[in-house]
Image 1: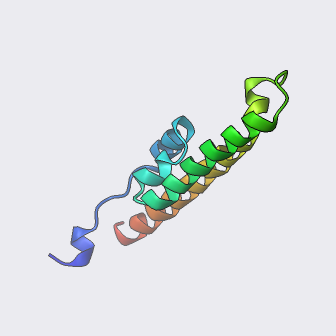
Image 2 (image 1 turned 90 degrees about the horizontal axis):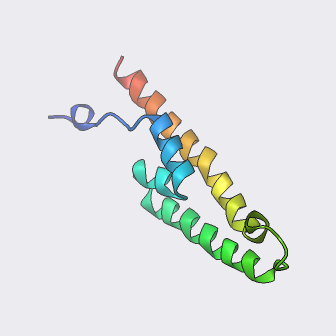
Length: 95
């Protein structure tokens, strides 16, 4: 069996998008980029905890974890974009 036959169909980008929305870094893990996913998850948690400590106590939960949510928000389109590129590349090779 050659390399093209062994190549598996990539995961659907919309499923990756859903996973990325549910958990930070999970979309990256689903497409095989575990280190990138771990880094997004780690920085999401780290910055959320940092913001929680420095934000005034009268802020909402979202306001107190804003930096972590910002990193999470950045990870969502990144995971989707990578999954879409993998998907389109596979579709071109397998019409």
